[in-house]
Length: 287
Image (cartoon, rainbow, N blue to C red):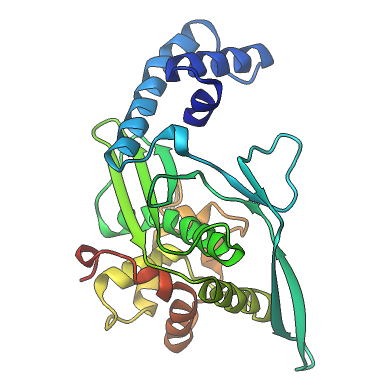
């Protein structure tokens, strides 16, 4: 909505009413009293997001979406790039190392501001402050860091630094979290992506390893064992009602039914996949 308003040179209210009217005519949104009833709540969330961006010197007018490779007919993108090509060594079933050429494509989240900030905006009824809730919000770092790595590896960004900004509108007060990533050269970014792709393409993945557990373990300190944290995460998904971890809303049904990796394997995965990202977390998060 903020991007729509900026693109059309409209106020947020005008852009909202235009979109709400279009949804009403298509039958994909409420009408009449129901539409009027949710308008105030939605505009309030938009104001919270806009103020959260302004606090960190990011203007909705500056936000841009980068797309790598082909996009669909209605895919929005402000900057379009060729897909990022990465050659990856993958060991096949017979133990032979083969070089696979991987094309990385897709869209970034909106990026803007002088410090090149990846922006995620969310609206929720409430937002808890315990360690697992904080870890759930850290999920936004994954997308921001992958976007940063692809932008730096492709040369679309100079790799001098990037940031992740999450603004959550709630019924009470907003939750705003910003994390700054350090410099990342094109070679370092491509190397991280290459190792990640090699692991994704060449290793088995039938195990339970949600990212929330990685962030909780990091917050407790590197000396803490990993497997008990994974067991806690699995227990949170074992009851009735909505899943307690947002990682449950992924493409794999019932992820908690898969076995846990061992301590050594879990630590190895954290080091290979998350170390560059975890190094950016502020000291207050470390325990």
